[in-house]
Image (cartoon, rainbow, N blue to C red; front, side, top):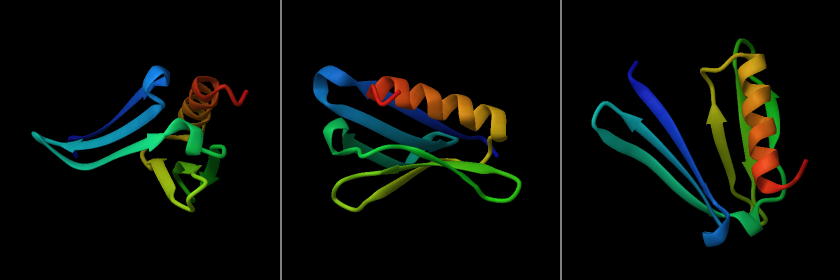
Amino acid sequence: MGEKTYILFERNRNSLEIKRRSWFSYYDQYRIKITSIGNAFLMNRGFTYEILIPTIDDCIYKLGGALGERESAWLLQEILTWLDFK
């Protein structure tokens, strides 16, 4: 409880940054080059959904886990729009 995930998208810096924060400290932080992202997908994990962001260097970044289907689908569409993957 009390966990938040922040997503910062900066096209002019070729950067997608993911930060996970619990209470007062960041415990997970990733910076991904936008040009290394191949696509983004929605995966059903039973009662929750995750957004998977694979990169060309075989890393997979995950978002979600606490969102329902509708919220996850909305977030995925926003990410695809930011990445201009429509």
